[in-house]
Amino acid sequence: VGDDMFGKMLKSKIENLGIGTENLIFSKKYKTTLAFVHTADDGDRSFSFYRNQGADSMLEKSEIKSELISAAKIFHFGTLSMTNEICFDATKFALETAKKSGVLRSFDPNLRLPLWESEIQAKEKILFGLSECEILKIASEELEFVSGEKSICDGINWIRSKFKIPLITVTKGKDGSEAFYSDGKISLHETAGTFSNVKTIDTTGAGDTFCACILHEILCAGYETFSRERLQKMLVFANAASSLVTTKKGSLSVMPMRTEIEQLIKDFSKK
Image 1 (tube, rainbow, N blue to C red):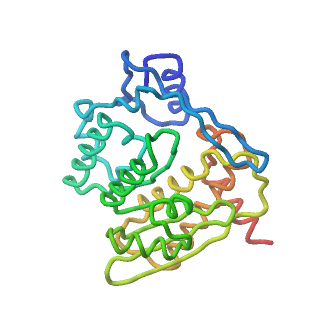
Image 2 (cartoon, helix red, strand yellow):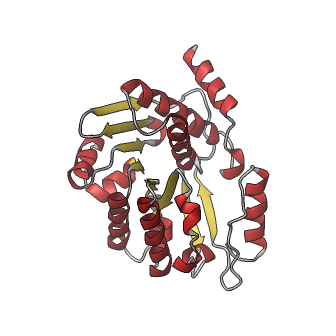
């Protein structure tokens, strides 16, 4: 982030949520990227960015601390750190470090077309991400964008024909989510609906919350053994959490506690 009021505000925000900031880098040369969110009447949103040489996009390979990545259990990345060659080089170095250290690599394309020079460039970087991950969270519209397939199953088959990604989760907004798992021995597919007993106000952060819940489950239960029951439970928990986020304005500061998620699941199961 930039060494400015926005960067310092972000530091304070995540510290208040119990997230460590000891390795957060403040740039004196570049400003913090600004993202503006427009929310439609149905809660969906569109984005505008002020990011011409934003601090996050100017992260250099030399600033990456290899020991931090090597000590992690999961390294999560997206395409926002690939929009120019400087941060793309840093991302590639981080991924190489994670792979050498046996760290699981998780990818969420998080496609934001206004940040790219062209759709072709955006697609190229998504394909790179697909070639580097073992866990994929992808939105249905992103799946169609990269594969050209309108059907989710056809899109997954397209990905599977080119990349070996054991766990793939697909978010479908108000239609819930799906999970696909294949390790060469077993092939599993599960779906879960959304929670209709919540009123959507703002969908910002729903996808990130879903992804965080999937990674949380893997950190707790491991990455070795999957079953249909486990995938179903994982999807329901992640759907509940992301549904709760949509009931409030904002994203980071409105992410629910585990007790809230479990209560929503309990209340919904009674209906």
